[in-house]
Image (cartoon, rainbow, N blue to C red):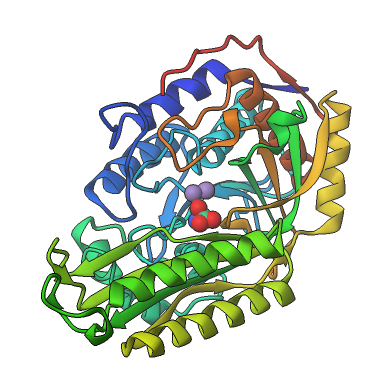
Length: 427
Ligand code: HGY
Ligand code: MN
Ligand code: MN
């Protein structure tokens, strides 16, 4: 019995979902729990209902559907998951590919009537991006007990609205309790979002784990004063402190070298006027490293510098942690099985860590979890021009199908790809 991935059907769904929150020059913006997210949820759950699957949602809006095993049970499914919320300059593939690819796998299984020992599920998790509400991987973190439900519901987004109010506003909260979805194993197909696979012309990334993430928000308070009349020594310039912190973050990444990365994604001044020395500066710093020890060293150096810069300017400074996740290793047996399956399908593959955070890292402590990467053109993501070609997607989904079916327990099936036509760059 062979499962054939229908890439045309999958691309139709990818473009249909990409139309929700579409941006004028391509890409899409579907911030977590926004009206656009609501519309995306409605579209995706509609496809799940069309497959005759029962759709479940839990108290923070995580949503899943399970295809029962050969005995009709839905206990402890093999889960294919990811997210359908996007950042503000989102592409069509980040997160969406893992969810829609999972739907394609289940539909292909239904088409040929594959019976499995274990149920198979597809899921999307609330607020993976962490763009509107911090931290990221919020829904999956709550579902797996890494994040506290009450704390997350109370989390206030960058627009001043709480997760709880935003959930209510789009009626996304469900009646399943936290932890209702108990996977026997978890697999996530995702775009690489970096340059490695494309530059080495490799089909598949076999992801070994996820690097550590440290998100901080600094609030620096100085003194508003006249830009023209106030002598420099008299100033308490919060803007200068913020600029110094940004330069220090950059210097840390330069001096530590790869894989250390540092990003200042947000910086706002108050009163934000041309002729007023900033009274307050608020900024975020995102530090990441595959080594927890080195990440801690980077944090210690940055935080000390921030205090020193603030002292020199006679400002006060407050730091709030927005997200802090240690590096995670995926299940070595599952990683090997992905590599083995890739080679059986004739795909080239490379074992590699993930630079981005993913829902999979929240499942890793609880059940065998792993990820499959497909290449990103020019290595870009969180950008409206994010792109992966259909024939590359087809390989990722065919591999996902093969691994899921073997994880779910059935006679080995050949997973072949149907003929693939490149749909062209619609982003
Ligand atoms: O920030 C990340 O790594 C992910 O996009 N949430
Ligand atoms: Mn993602
Ligand atoms: Mn992302």
